[in-house]
Image (tube, rainbow, N blue to C red; front, side, top):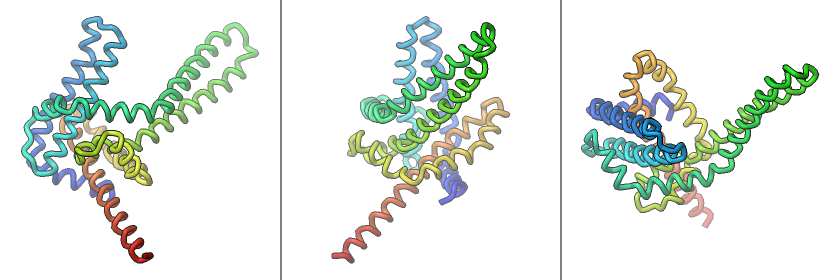
Length: 256
């Protein structure tokens, strides 16, 4: 299934629900905004602010995705349902985040190191070019290497994170499956399909530009469109996986 076909399926799922999910998206983004800047406004410690933001973002995103999933299955969904679902599934969403974070710890640390290296090399160049012109060529080489490492480590982190792109949807679709297995299942489904996922995201670039030119108001409809498209993408992966399993079973029977 091509990206445009996935988007068409998503629009079909959203029939009759655009208004509800535009309001849902507005509330979701408003809550994220409040919990992002609220702690700063009240001069809360930086670490506490980051932890609170991560906590709220994790549980609300899980609840939001659940609402889209329920609607795609023909269930009646209210604009506030995602909040209720979020707090009912705090443990599950946090465990998914925990298992994902463990597997991305090394790529994440590499991005931090490359960022520090790049920042240090640029600062060093600004300092030493004023005091010693002879060191300037060496510093330029170091900066170029730092930029390359910066790009490579962030690309590595992004590609690794794609392995777990559908873990939340698996957790929603299969509530009896534990969180660790959801992560492993996501990696299995995404194997060989990361390029398709990236192409699907890139197919929304034009819509993102439209959203910017509408003073971000357009994102109230673009965001639901994207979320439902990701659900359709997961369903495609699941169907392909089921077909492959049936084929492998037939082959095994023939061998026997």
